[in-house]
Image (cartoon, rainbow, N blue to C red; front, side, top):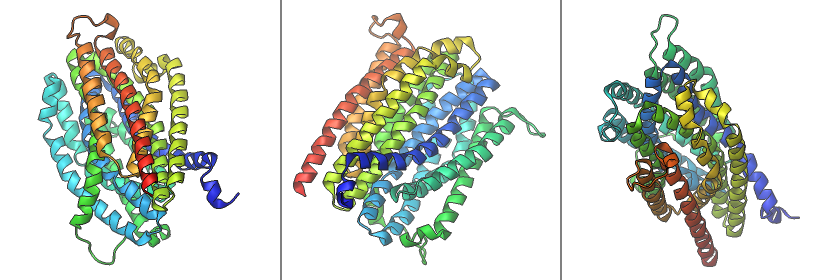
Length: 461
């Protein structure tokens, strides 16, 4: 079998996706474990601080994910350049990506420092409000570092070198985040116990350390010289490149924002139901996010391979790569989802010793297990579409499905506005049911649209 034929073999693509995906999975899990560690440690510090973390994290994640989604435009752009072997052009995209990250940091930090529009929706009691504001103000200092690190991560992923990103993120989690969290949340060595704000300080220190390590490697490492990451002259913002990135990145960022805010606004509305219900939602949402990292990472790896094949002009191979990645994501997500449902009692016990919070959280894990198939399908299709640099129509699908059907339907069920919601679907469960149904609809729509785009591109070629 020739090399060209082997590249088009579906089994070969599955192996390539898996090889690229596993370090992305580990890196993504390291990132999300920051939130898991915050939740577990804060839960043992106090219920008020756990609720404050849930509310503050919902606001921060909405801002960060929306802005980092805009940064994701770098991945298919660099991937296509790498597939076309236009290595010198990659350095220009990386440097402009740094400028884009800095511009977005100004916007994001302002939103974190002045979160009143979002916090007013939650109608949180005063003891929560002050803690949340302090938490968000501290995280505004971490945001520039996390967004600039996204540039480094996008470069490495797009050129099939994700292991260095994995190493940095796992290292900062284990060596910095964990010990700093324990010290700053609970106090020690003469430092006071800070609770939720202590977790934010630990995040800030870890984020800036990861950025410094990553950019030292990019500037001095032999593996990056062919991409000309470090220019001999200061490079100003190139507005035509910025507009090109924004043209793709804004709808991508918006789709991320829609996806995350469908959960964020769930938390803000559920906050009206009391601290115990909000804490239970935080546990389920936090662990659901951990599971989401698996299909997300596989989808990211799939998008990279598809972009590289498109850049090389192999559109049939790009379609095979996309199919292999989506299929792998579904198998992994469904398998893990079922395992988590069977062990849900033990998982909840790791998060909280509070029996009331645990009783509310346990039923929510049914929804987590149910929507794994649809979640893996929609994120896989979305990333493949982004590899084709198609993002606007998928964003509209996300808006209608996740905001309209998911959040709107969940609001009707959760607050029993129609007066006929079964008792078991009132409260947090109603919001989770609405979200699950919306994922079913979005996955079907995105997969149909992906097939349409692939067909048109192959005919045009």
